[in-house]
Image: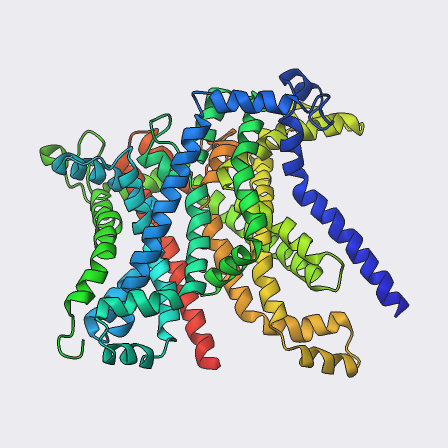
Length: 285
Length: 304
């Protein structure tokens, strides 16, 4: 028993050391966000002389025209939230009719969606741009540099996996539940919204987490569709725009990074359990 | 539903996703494959300017040293990443499933880097490699670390290692939680029975836990493979493809992974058709990987 205890202590020390190594980069960001440029050049590893500087740096980021933090943050929230609402609603209702309609056509549509998960962004990115431009011009709608274009793109790129996840879950819901409702006089569309949609809660959480982390952090798609320095910018786009404009001005770049990280880390600390659960569920299916 | 096979609800519920699918995936995909056989460019998009030129773009790729280099580099990066990430994640998973105090805090700590986008992480590590590590070298008396020529990102070989370090740091926590779920799924009574029979903890690990984690290994290996192969964000912010190296008598980007090679060919070299042909090759590799994965999973299902 005694040796087992000793073994555990070694493991605990190892865990603490690894934990510190893993969090060290975050510490570096925090510490250097509170420094003046000369302090960083002198010693990036020491604690700042004046923690109050962090506020000054944050104000610089808040007011910078290259990052436009407030508006970029708002855009990121709008894009992520709208895409998530649409993805969850549209994918779940599509998955439901695909599960409950047992025809060749229905199965064929589902298989096509699933097969499309293999398609990497790279093969569609160049044509997507010119196609969005052409369609936009032909119909007089803005698909490039606009919310509608990027949200449509996220629904398109996220729907296959979301439908796949909903499909797997809905298959396990007994049909009797819906049949009882039909007898009660529920219309078909109503059955979905009133009975099925609420049952899907756990899988909604998975789809939200998986797509939420992806969309919030995504860089290449916003870079192409929104472009750098335009009216609508997401946080990753803004950070990259800022880092490009202030090359090696690490005090400000790291402050910008800190401000980009804080919201998602706070969110994680609040919803840690469902986030990890969602990520695992999404990978295994 | 029983009478009309595809009632109005069927089409009504499917219409939005079908619209998005066609707009974002189907049309660009079909156009993309077609354009890879043409003289397509940002200016020559329509009409007479858009000529069908057969496999010319593909022949050009074969002769292009940047593509050959980028392809080999990406394969090397992917293999390294798969090995390192899975080894680290497996070790972490073993660690945080032992009866140590505060293991949930460790799990959360190891997982957190995964929540931050690769683009931002790349900038953080650029600072660590370029500023923090040289400063650490001066501090502990290793002047060589502070030499600008010895910076991790200064040479392409070490910069590739830098990419693997960042990739591992970012991804290990995610793969770890998959392993943790698999380890916790191993029936407890089986482990207890083995313990009573006198099996050591190492023996239990390799004779019971690992064999029962086979499915998890398939998942994690393919996940790390595909994600490493598609890496773009960290590449963009950490090294931006640099530093340059000489390859087949030409100076080229030393750490330009395939996704970035495609991007640069289209936007920097203004050769969208050439970039598109590369993207088709890129897609084919990933499609083959997926087919292999699906067939392995099918085989397993039959075995069970």
